[in-house]
Amino acid sequence: MVGKESIGSKIFDVFNILLMLLLCVVMLYPFLHVIAVSLSSSEPILRGDITIFPKGFNVGGYKYIFQDPFLYSGYAHSIIYALGSTLFMLTFTSLMAYPLTLPDFMAKKFLSIFLVITMFFSGGLIPSYLLARSLHLLDTYWIMIIPGCVSAFNVFLFRSFYQSIPADLRESAVIDGANDIQILTKIYLPLSKPLLATFALFGIVGSWNGWFEALVYLQDENKYPLQLILRKYLFSLSFDSGTGTEVMQAMLAQMNVNAKNIQMAIVVIAMFPIMVIYPFLQKYFVKGVMIGAVKG
Amino acid sequence: MVTSHKFFKRFWKQRYLFLMVLPGFLVVLVFSYFPMYGIQIAFKKYSAVRGMWGSEWVGFKYFILFFQDPMAMRVLKNTILLGIYSLLWGFPAPIILALLFNELRFPKFKKAVQTISYLPHFISTVIIVGILRTFTEREGLFNKIAGWFGVDPIVFLSEPEWFRTIFISSNIWQGIGFGTILYLAALSSVDPTLYDVASIDGANRWQKVRNINWPHIKPTTIILLILSLSGILGTDFQKILMLYNPDTYEVADVIGTYLYREGIMGSRFEYTTAIGLFQSLVAFILLIGANMLSRKVSDTSIW
Image 1: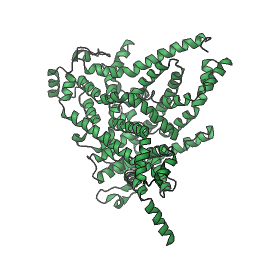
Image 2 (image 1 turned 180 degrees about the vertical axis):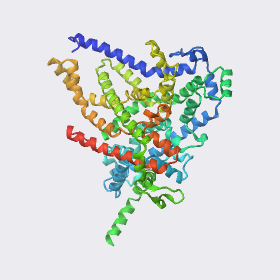
Image 3 (image 1 turned 180 degrees about the horizontal axis):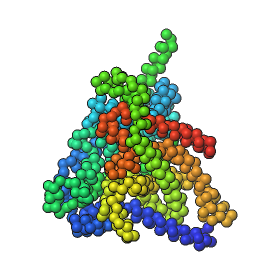
Image 4 (image 1 turned 30 degrees about the vertical axis):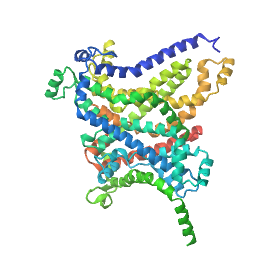
């Protein structure tokens, strides 16, 4: 097949490889640029001279950011929300999916319909907000952790994964006198490790990157996740329009940093955990998308 | 008497199972069903004191208000146009990229390019917007590139005519790589001997793509198209919320952002609940419609 290729085909190969290299540049450039700006000194940034290498090495932006207590509280809260919501999601979803795999479970049909309906209808933003308000859940950790933790889609995915576990295993455990909770924790969950890992990553990344729920449900800045702290920096420190207060500008000038330094430094800090786990993410997410596709 | 006794006995036997579904059941009941019940305020004059149930009915008042509001018409128009343009540009992009990936001959290179192209998918919207704001500034990258071609600097985010381009192209940048996964999965099911047979028959590469690869990804394409069609009103308003400003409201303000401004910021709860209900009804009808259409045209259906 390789031996007698047409010239057109070879030209296409070259063109395709060049296109892919261009794609890589387009995908990576913004990230490298952000890192470079965060490490550069003011003058080249103002001239717009930075590409992907820092100019006039300067860590003032990071120094400034690390002085802000909101950075630490934002980081801590993002971790709390990410781990909390993921833990509840995995626990509640695995618990709920298990009985739905048993043919003689009395509420099986009712619960399936109960869940399917939520896939097509939802109350929407405003009724959800009013509910949270009337339950006094605004400005609490719970509102960031509980509401999204059980989704019909996830329960059905877990159920179909459990269904691929041979029923003999369960039957012999029943004969040995195990109850259902023991069967779930001792047999089903250990066999579902890849599924649990995939969804743990899904949950953590989703929560880490989310910001809108926090914007709607949290007013107390002390409970903000990192993304909202980042948003505050991106919006309130604008070099272009000079909206920062004069005191702030003076202080920044003294530290030889400008708004861009600081903004890009906090972007780098917010991206850091995702970049570190990216190799795992990539692998498990591809798997996760496939699980979803087979089911959906 | 006997049957209820039996029923109770069976229930008691399954008590652990009921215990297991209870937490999930309660979460869905409270956070999915209570808000659905709350939709009734779209037809009521909501009073926090009298509660949801005690508030007075006003019929379709807020729906009529919505359709008479010129602002609302602008929002509807923007939502539909942005949805259509996003679909038109954004939907074919990952298909084309997947077909190009599939033509790469060096497995390691292919894997590396794929891995790099997935990266933006995992980055938060706040960060993406931060990068976009940097690139679109007067001294930013986009103006630098425009300068090479002798174009005067543009403050992109203040120009209504640039908003859609920036919004949609950045969405494509973020999603194109990850969007190839399902198509590549479909392509990996192609039997390699088909290519050999086609070569013997003298088919060139384009013919192989058209007659072997395309039929393999067609069902996936149709299902994803149905889903995108039904989501046409569901523009990523969270991103717009950080990307737009009063200068660009005329093209950028969509249902989601309008709901946030009027509802959460402006406390017009009944009016915005009515708009939200209208939006989800349209989305539901679109889903059913797209699915029916696809069933007729291609025998592919999502249920």
